[in-house]
Every structure is written in structure tokens, then in C-alpha cells.
Image 1: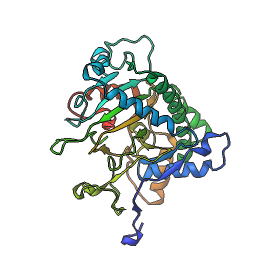
Image 2 (image 1 turned 90 degrees about the vertical axis):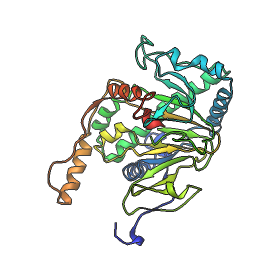
Image 3 (image 1 turned 60 degrees about the vertical axis):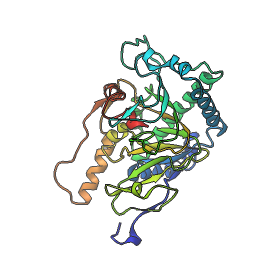
Image 4 (image 1 turned 45 degrees about the vertical axis):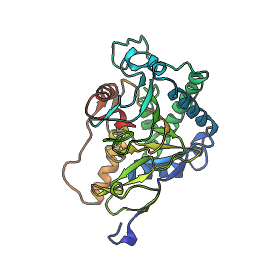
Length: 352
């Protein structure tokens, strides 16, 4: 990239990538889709995934309707499935009960995790999911969960292809996520007060949202990146610490995807977990689904990523010790992260 403004990369919106080629065995266009994912993951850490050929857009709209119905219930009815009745993780949280970076988030939510054998609510995240009694709620959300789990594995394969894994290496990586300890949140946001000291959801994989513009924002910190002004972001929010906040407005038939910490470790930093936040001026509903590794999976940099970095360093004549991410057991990582969710410090999944 050159030094002149003409040579700088201009971005007005996140890239849109269709997963269609990976929905069929030997689908045409797989390599170009994998290359597009690799570019999006390494450049931005965020992208729109077009899943219109995978789901009926009316399905997530029905999930949003059910979420709206639940959050409209009287407070005492919502509190019947409070996290206080379970493992302090699974269930409903009131407004400002969730914390990100030491500040209360102005949203309420229901959290669901992968069911576990021998549940014990005395153990963190090891209890049972609590479901609203609204007709059709559990049935329709469980159907969505199965579809998102399947989609998660499909995207994992596409990303593995884009990173250049061999079939054997993909088989090994697949064994780390074939029993995903997934997490799903159903979030309701009231309007953010003008004097509120925080965000609807502080700076924080598949995300479905109501079609509300100027709410979800992604932080891009690339030197030389020109960002076209879109939407109604206040000027003071467009540039911060040498980077830019851009809108990630909902697109029908798409989910917004971001790179999580585990992919950052697997890729040894080639893919970055990107800062993002939610600022609401009106009511909105979001249903993020986190496709995670198996609870006991050991996560460490992939040989393919290390080889690619060594080749790049050699071509550029870089010497010295390369930074290598330390291995982590996913379940241990998750317990530490959830442990700060209702305290000070970093919130769950950076507060998505």
C-alpha cells in the first residue's frame, strides 16, 4: 500500500461473503469464498455472511418477535428464570446486571449454553438452561441453535481452507470443535439515555439483529485506512486512538460475523478479534450465537499459520523472535471470562 491518499484502502462497509459454495459437496466457488474469508478475517476481523440460501429470512424475524414478547413481560415474570436461580450464567439478567470494562451495560438478556451431563448449578456455567414459557419459544430457538451449530462447522471448514490447512490439519482442527460448547444470547436494548455513562453493550459470532441502523459499530485501527462517513455517527466517535468506528448495520439474509479470541490464537494473530460495541437510540433486539471450541479443547497456534508467518518474515527480511500465542484450554478460558461478567473487568465475549 502506498503513502498517498489515492493508494489508501477505502472502506464504507464490511465485506459481504456468501457461504453458498460450502453448503454443497465440491461446490463451485469454494476457493474464492475461502480467499474472501481469509482477506476479511486478516484485514478487518468482521464480515457479513450471506446465509440467504441456508435459512429463510422469516425465521430469525420470528425469533426477534418472540424475544420482543418476552422482554415486554412484567419484571417479576422475567425474574422467574433469573440466573440467580441457576449457575449465575444460564438465564435472564436485568438491565445493567451485565458488566463490560467496569461499566454496567444498558441491556437485558437471556443466556443459553450447551447442555452438560450431570448439571450442577453450584458449579459456574454447569447448570441447566432456563426457558421462557412463551408458546413456541423453546422449540423455535432450539431449531435455530441446531442450524447455527451446523453453520459454525461449515464456516470453520471455509476458514481452514482460506488459511491453507491441509486435509489432515483440518481433520485435527475439526476434532477441537465437533462438540462445540456454544453460547447463545437473546438481548433486548432500550433506548440509551443521553447522560448514560456507558454503552448499550460495551466494546466486545453469528449475530442476527433487528434492522436498526447506527447501532452495532466496529473499530478499525488500520494505518492508512480511509473510512467513508456513513450513517449518523457523531464526529467524536468516528476517530479514536488512530482508528475509526464504522457501522455494521443489519442486512436481510445476512448475519454479522466476528473473529473470536480462539481464532486469534489458532492463527497466531493473523486473524484479529476486533473491538465492537452497541449504541442504541431506540429499542432493539439481537441474538448472537457463539460457535466455540469443545470445552476441554487445547487451543494453540496452527502449524500452517506459523509457517505462513515465517515465510512472510523471510520475504521481508525480518529477523528476531516471532511472537507466539500461548496455548489455552478453552473451558478454563471461558470460566475466567464469565467470572468477570457481573463484576468489574472484561465482560462476556467482550460484551456482545
